[in-house]
Length: 126
Image (cartoon, rainbow, N blue to C red; front, side, top):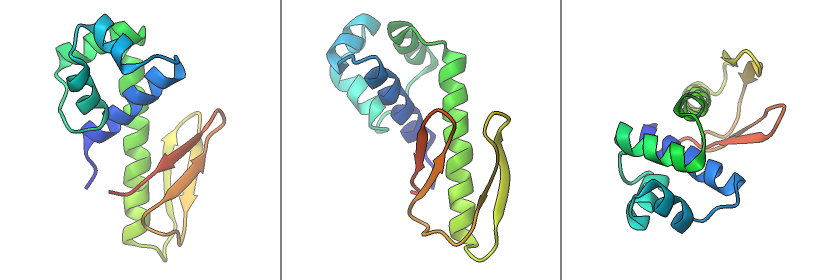
């Protein structure tokens, strides 16, 4: 099962780490407890829209950019899940216009790696 809160947490963590910032710095700037932010990043807590807005402000990231990245991760996770369900048939889907079309055939259900132009994206089927 794909959990949106896990995908969201992964994207938030990557955004923070790209900036070289600590949980403490972001939690202080967003006025969110360090423990709660940690749980959100680990996908253990559902973040409200108000909390997401505060975290995005602290990270200086537009919420639309954050949600677009989460949407891309979700599409890739769904692709991996489809490939795992029918490993003998190719799965073709448009992930995003920038990435073009992706085809996955006969891959282990637990891991798919897709190389995008700017970075590698690991997709792990839950």
